[in-house]
Amino acid sequence: MAITLEELQLATRNHGLPLEALRYPVTPVGLHYLLTHFDVPVVPDGWRLRVGGQVKRELTLSLHDLRARPPTTSVVTMECAGNGRAHLDPRPVSQPWRSEAVGTGEWTGVPLRSLLVEAGVSQRAEEVLFSGSDRGVDGGVEQAYERSLPLDEAFREDVLLAYDLNGAPLPPQHGAPLRLVVPGWYGMTNVKWLERITVLERPFDGYQQTRAYRLRRDEDDEGIPLTRIRPRALMAPPGIPDFLSRHRIVDAGPCPLEGRAWSGLAPVAAVEVSVDGGAVWTAAEVEPQLGPWAWAGWRFVWEAAPGDYELLCRARDEAGNEQPLVPEWNVGGYANNAVQRVPVTVRA
Ligand SMILES: Nc1nc2c(c(=O)[nH]1)N[C@H]1C(S)=C(S)[C@@H](COP(=O)(O)O)O[C@H]1N2
Ligand SMILES: [Mo]
Image (tube, rainbow, N blue to C red; front, side, top):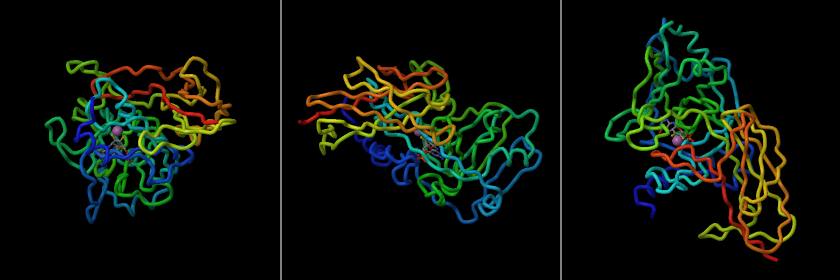
C-alpha cells in the first residue's frame, strides 16, 4: 500500500530520531522525535497555568512563579504510541512511523504532586485532566489537545511539569512554555503547551482518551487504553548507508553494534542480538539506565564475514515483557514493538 500525500504531509511535519542519534545518551534537542496533532501554538503574552476543578484552592501561576519553586531534573525516554505503525499490514493511516519515534530528554520542572497538594484535591477526585492550548479537529470533533491521568499516577513523585529540556527553555515544538512529563507512559500522555489542569470527579471522556490511543481489534471494539511503553531495543545502523534505500554497507571484520533499549513497564533486563535473521540470539552487554525510566545503552561485537545479513535486536524487561518477532495489528496502529530488522551487506 503506497504512502498517501496526507501521510507524507504528516511525516514532513513530525520527524523521527535519526537512528544514528541513538549514539547520544541524551538526545540533542533537534534530533528528538516530534509529534504534533494540530498547529504549534504561539505562547500568548501573560501566559498562566490554571489549576482548578475539584480543589480547595484554585491556583494561577506564571512561568516565573513556577521557576521560583525547587526544580527537579530527570532523564526520561519518550516514545510515541504510534511508533512501528508503518510496519503493520494493512497500514493504519496516520503518522507513518517506522521505528524512530523516540528520544531521551533531560527534563527540568516542578513536580506535579506539589501543585496538587497545594491546591488541595477533593476526596471525590478520580482523575486529573491536562489541557493544551492547541486546537483542531480530529475524527470530526473540534477539540483542544487534552488527556487525563488517574489520580494515583498524577500523584507519583516523578511526574513533572517541565519548562526546560536539556538545560534550556522548552522550544516551541516541544511544548513551550510548559508540558507534562509522565515517565514510562507513551508519548500522548505528555501534554504540551499546557495551560490548564483540572481535577475531575469522573473519568475524562474526551476524544484523545476514549477514541484515540486505545488498542482496538476492529471499529466496534471499545478497546483497551494505552498507558505504559512496551519494551524495545533499537540499533544505531552500522557502517554507511546507501542514500536512497538506506541499506547498510559494512567492512568485513569485527563490527561494533550498539543501540539503546527501554521499557516503561519495568527496568531493562536483557538485550539480545541476532545476525542471522532471528535463528540464533546472543546476549549483548547492557549499560546501566540513565534513570529509572530512561533507556540503557547496549553493545555487541559482530565478527562480520562477507555476505548479506539481516541484523535483529530485542529487549526484555524485568517483568518478563519481551518484544514479539511479528507485529500484532490494531485499528490505530499503536504499540507495535516487534523487533527491528536491519539489512546489511558486508564487503570484503
Ligand atoms: N498539546 C499537545 N500535546 C501533545 C501532543 C499534541 O499534539 N498536542 N502530541 C502528543 C504525542 S502523540 C506525543 S508522541 C508527544 C510528542 O512529544 P514531542 O513532540 O515533544 O516529542 O507529545 C504529546 N503531547
Ligand atoms: Mo504520539
